[in-house]
Image (cartoon, rainbow, N blue to C red):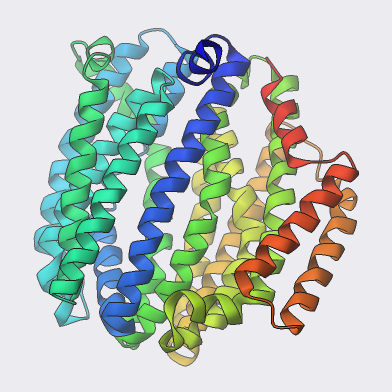
Length: 484
């Protein structure tokens, strides 16, 4: 019993620490996202496409107003602390100071500027509340980054579960009392504050170890270091919220709600590569430029896992979209089916994009990230302008897919120049499993088997064949964490 306790709560070696952190990151993100997804489904049904669209629109407009608040400080703190460069504590202290100043200014922008950017009058009352939510979220992200420096992800998991449980329970209660978007906003604000208080309590003993007196030289170094990444973050935020904002220009809140429903399901799936990429970030930070050969092996193995997970989800999502949407959101959201199908196909490019962004970042090649995102965001805006007026939510999804594919392609090419990894040489090894799984999905769907049962059976068939071929996801993960 003590051995199990030590394994999951004490950092004893590189291999054990990566396994432990991956486990707790998965538990924290998965449980938190599931709780939040339950609320999203409940709210989307109770508020209707119109009310849910207004809430989603407010989040997007507020994020655009707060676009300068996230300049990559959280990721930089993790990278610098993992690599432990000279004067890294002074660098981190200066980063925290800069982040605090920018965050306060950005929150003021959200509260007072967002109503002027909005094209939906009903949304204006929500901006002050959402501004507070984003303020709490940004501070919490910094605190989480500090907690990850000490690789205590189990505490992060506790915080996320409690925070999202508060949001879920309070959200359901408030929506039952008052079925309007403001109820969702209040629930998010209270839950975000609870999460912030918890994470600050968790890091209270460690934060003093990283905060020391800041000088002007360190502050200038932070600004110089973050500028390329700030540009990437700026462009990424614009790209992530442009679709909903531009839908608001030409279309009704109902169309936004339909698009957002499919988008939220897609975002729930993307938690998988995000968790794996986050868990391996400290390891990759240590290997980058120090042991490029091992870095290449880690990159290839993680990419193999991404393909083995992403490809069956994408195919299954496309086939079962017409059952998933009505099951989760109701018949009012049937127009979201083709939107979800496009976003499921997009998983094939967004899965590797998450990892490639991290790998280029740990090599301190933020300028290459900026170039890729610039091409992508320009394409996204142009395509949204051309497609949304005529095709609505489907046009927005198509624009996002194409622009994401452009970014992924550019980053793939750039990363091969930095560290020439193999380009999916083992893809053929999972083809048999994919074919069997796809056949199973069609057969079960044809005979009217419940969509959830269909997903479970087809997934077991896919994993079973992988195990028989000795090419399981678990084996790939073991190989990743076995590299020291």
